[in-house]
Length: 500
Image (cartoon, rainbow, N blue to C red; front, side):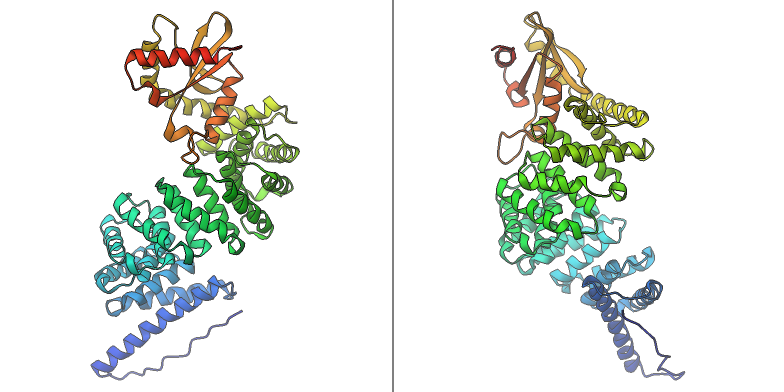
């Protein structure tokens, strides 16, 4: 533990010469900036800084001192101060923050890529109220210095922009990612994971770049932290990119480290959710599920609970109904039910619970999923609301299909097992056909092409159980003339008919 003590003022009540005053102020500024940077670095390296109130007092005093003299500060001193304040958990003061950032922008012409990226990272970490003009200046300056930027500076910049909700500019983003791709061999696992996470937030995809980043973090997984692997898996799932070897390495390494992690629920649910989205399941995933079933779930957030159950539903619907998976689902359903409807206030979490509950009933899971009736009602109502909004967006497709099949089949928009679908009655099929119009940019992986995305696979499996034939037709197949559309749809209907 470190102990800090300040000595009394060394400066008496005499008038110093102007040059000496400037030198003293510069030294005072530099010392405060260095002290804050040193404290933050020690904390980053796991050193206990002691009494938190004392540390907070030092941080507040340092922020005030640098603010007072920021007109004299160099870009490195300003960026180091901002980085340190963010790292040390400074209680943000918008007035001080604005002055420091303004001073940084005024000196932007002499700022290094590291100073710029540290500034952006600090603003994102501190929850800065975005100022597009300032952000544009910092990003433009970083873009101009890309050739000399380190992998860490590039990844911090990308992470910060994604966190700040930057209005995506593909030209700038492409330059930053290309530079990062060129430096993957020297990038740390954290830099690689943060870059992938940012791309997932932006939904920015380039096959070569994503493959290079994914391969690099898989190769360095032996030195990665569980947070790095969790973020990488989350990003790859979001980007709809999958490679069995990469996923196996990341999941195996995560399982080895997660027991000593301080955020096991987040990293576990991220990994399971990404595996489910990509259809990845092997002994490592099953072992990870077994580990999850033995945890104290009271510390997990509602989002971690709902993501885990939704991941279980996606994997189970596609045949991964192992003993470990069932045990995991039983424990998580019990925890969800014990919390009740009041805890699950986020709409997406409730919708996921509804889909998982339906899957639990289908496979006969002990307890039948959600045992709290109010939570189940809230979940199903949320799913219905979500499907109504999707139904509005799909009305043009409904009209197109109905027009193409006019005179052959009657098409009806309906809710099938909680999902929006198009029903097609047929005399030989009591429950009729269901037409599912898929979208390439939503229902399939980008890599490998043609593999169904986990969410779509679950939806299709649950709908198929409620009809006599599920007909899949991609939206791209309905772009031709009405005669061409009719030909495609009649062929799909014939293929979907039982016994064909």
